[in-house]
Image (cartoon, rainbow, N blue to C red; front, side, top):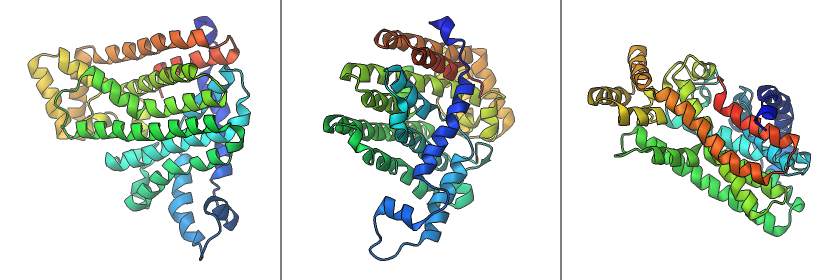
Length: 361
């Protein structure tokens, strides 16, 4: 299986799928407003819409952000899981709107909460359109994806539809608990941040939308509750591993770091990543104390940021994090490998998980 998985160029497959995903999103969220679209979304106005204002406060910021790029890996995961379970993913294409739009909404809100400056090589949305507009469009993106789901309701029996709604509701609660934990740690409110607590934070924050994608996909494919849960756990691990690799890339000379405004933004924010936690456990007292001092400064001084990175590198924290992510995927894949029938989609799913851990972008 490993040899077969290696033959897939996942970056190319993501690029191939992206136009289809984007066209589907544009089907539901047009670039230019119309009375017909407003009525399809909101119903007929009791009084009178102001389409020009809604264009400027919803559609323009929405497409400004979506057009910046992004890997679209969550909707790709959704389609791949359906295919790996032997169903036609095109029948459920409208539902790719859920993980991708919610994900982008969470970034918009996250950038406000972190007071970030850059995202995907452009100023963050709130720095262009204002914090009020960005908050509103970001939270709108959390709820709008329910409309494509409801308008595809006839594809499901009532029990399955209720399960999909339950997954959505639970994961939207989870993602906010994950963000709350991360914010609290930035503020220095975490008295004892362990590896286990970090993993739970990631499971809630980054694992949530991967888990949502896989579980809803499995429900679309008619999978049993057991298969739904196992695929959800696998996808959660993929999300956690993706976050760990994101943290690694954030403190390297990577395209991802450049797109966020430079190396070490996580250090500026004071984030307690897996690498930080590991270093604080292993380092000599003076090094541990110095690392915490720099994190608590929330500094943008490149010299201090590089000093913090060097402390982590000195104790092998970066290599530890990379291997931890790889092992996480290996262990959860074993469970999924047993329940999925042999297929090309299964091979792609394994290659996809490996790509997210090893990527350099």
